[in-house]
Image 1 (cartoon, one colour):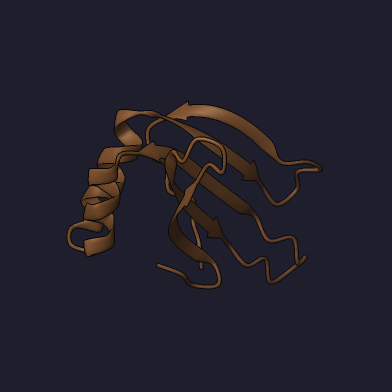
Image 2 (cartoon, rainbow, N blue to C red):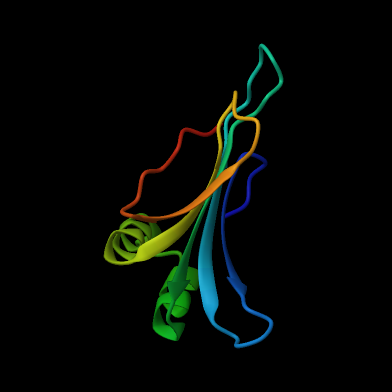
Amino acid sequence: MDESHFSVGICACVHCGQQFLRVFCEQIDWVDGQDPQYFLTAPVSEDEVGNLRMLSGVDSLLAEIFMQRITLRHDFPKDAQFPVNRWAHGMVMPAHD
């Protein structure tokens, strides 16, 4: 899934080959031009990658993956000077356009 303000993709570590599910969300700030951006990243298995590529039941699979494991979050809200990186449980899908 790839849109200008929302994308879901799979990336892999160049050193060990571990695959990760990555979700990107951005909301347009029409007033100040400071678009909030958020990334969620979680490790995935080969089976999960195969299921994600079939694009059948992706919404429930995304929720299941993000609810079952710790995820790396990269949050850059509108008025923040710097982004915040943190480990988190659960899936909170930020608003996006």
